[in-house]
Amino acid sequence: MNNQHTRNFYIIPYVFWIALFVVAPIILVLYYSFVDIEGHITLDNYVKFFTPVYLKMTVSSFWYAFLITAFSLLIGYPTAYFLTKTKNKQLWLLLIILPSWINLLLKAYAFLGIFGAYGVTNSILEIIGIGAKQILFTDFSFVFVSVYIFIPFMILPIFNALEKLNPTLLDASRDLGASKWTTFRRVIFPLTLDGVKSGCQVVFIPALSLFMLTRLIAGNRVITLGTAIEQHFLVTQDWGMGSTIAVFLILAMFIIMMVTGRKRRGQ
Image (tube, rainbow, N blue to C red):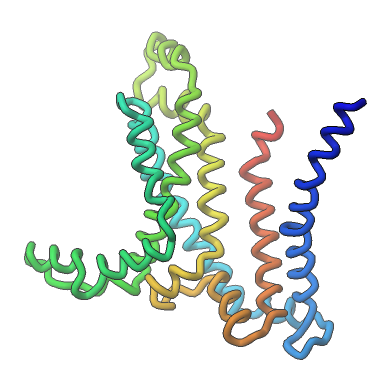
């Protein structure tokens, strides 16, 4: 009985934290989504969201988030797989994760120099005879920098899933005559699917709401829902419309978490 009371006592700070910094902000966002710019209760924000402008923005946000997640997975899975085969895999993993400790703004400004008109990339292109190109403020630069920033979060859960893989299953697959590709397709990948789902979840969800990179790297040529939220809250001061967009982003994130976490919860 005393242990039960002790556990209940220690759980109070966590409940208070969640209520204050998770539940309360969501309730505020939901409330402001029903308020227009003049402070009146209305449904106009939701009606406005389903106009072609915002629907196109939503499709664009999901498309770029999909591209960032897909490229992160295509690069991250082989990287995680080869890491498990190296001798100093923990050291290599640390070197991959280390850039994620650097402030996002600093990394964005670093790429402004790398991809700029007089940056390192254009200098190399001129040396090899291709000539300077407009790399910055393009879709390519936005996706490239986003993948660079998010790829450690894709590699880590996949690496952990591969590390937990029972090696005797691979030996059994080879003993039964399966090729390396068949072993990967029928044994390795299915057994590490939870790691893939976790990686896709932690990349896709924040990629949906990117706004700083769209401004610094893409030069506002890439417009996402995150950019729209920033504009409505900081420029137009239309908190109601910004909150409405945020509500749909929160719903999308919950759906994504449910889809990517369904199998794991059922186990």
